[in-house]
Length: 285
Image (cartoon, rainbow, N blue to C red; front, side, top):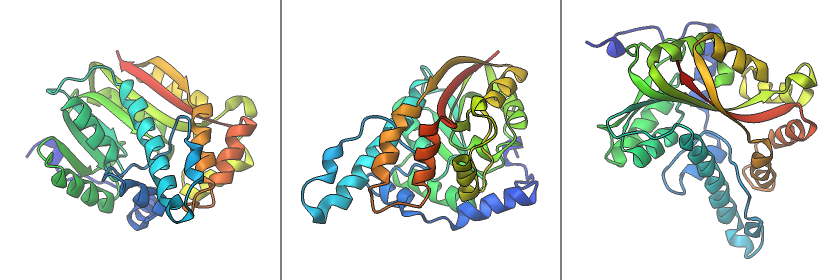
């Protein structure tokens, strides 16, 4: 039995149990309907210029056009993240930490041909993602596990790259980055895309607090990311402000039949400067 297969506690607090319960029960059409477009199920938002012509044309096909465009934007976001992992060889190994229904892991494997391990604390997400990998015939290279990202059980130095795509707001960053510093080989790359509140605004705004309540998460201030990365031998190589780039996604989603009620909070927070959408890439030294 390897260390990654050894039994270990997945949940270490009532809060983590509540997060797992949320995602085990989640059946949001904005996640499921978009994934049905091509079988790639993401659990994040989008970037890039929207094609507003999808709002025009026959009414009976308007919803389908909107869904396809929203999915295109979220796929573009995944591509931006993977671009910042750098050159990855087929013999290397990646960790998709907070992998959701597995879309990012499948895209990474298709691009690089490498092995990918995805982890989630939702058993339902893990089972769904493994089914998707099996359908695509890549179960030998892409595997999903029920694990806590703060204590994965994987062997030290076993990954060439790790990413979080909108999942760091569920954990303490100092503990998280210490685990990644352990898991990454020297010179390995970490990338995250995340919403963070703007320290210069002060405390979290009302809109940011609404987002926290909606997703039962705790959005971190921007400064905490850089402080904890530096404390754990992760040196930033790129910081990209994607705030303006994500606005078209949210503006289009607000006009779609897939609204969840949180769209206005995101748009308000981004536009009043209290919230930022950042990509951070860092190397393990």
